[in-house]
Length: 172
Image (cartoon, rainbow, N blue to C red):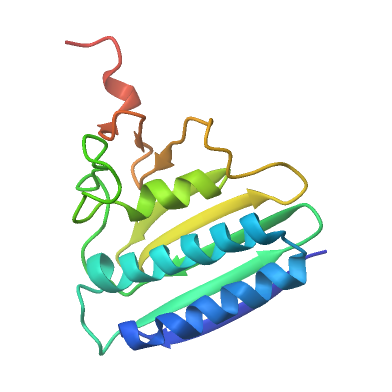
């Protein structure tokens, strides 16, 4: 059995502190230690910021839905915007720069470091949905893992920061 918390926020950065507080409360309910609590708050805050900037393209007349589903075994956080354009193959992780040097492109790598699985989907009826799943009983967020972010068409962002299309493997 799992618990669910759903909150709908106006697409406005002034609500980021509310999102931060909600993530902190969920981390407390789950029993995350300090490191995992911080990582969850950071990942959810980055997801909300991405939804505002890239999905809703700073349109404050739209909304952002944050959904937490959790049980003894997992935590799943979905962040959905009302974007009219998909955030998909245009996603690029700036690995050539340090995190502090990059102007943008830090959100998904930070989220992927925390989560065991990250998926990004676009539905023209509802917008973009970023879903991060964390195994609660395992040690998530290890800096030694190689992370992938799945995008809407089944591709993923690999460790080189570029979108990888599995259907083109072995083709030149």
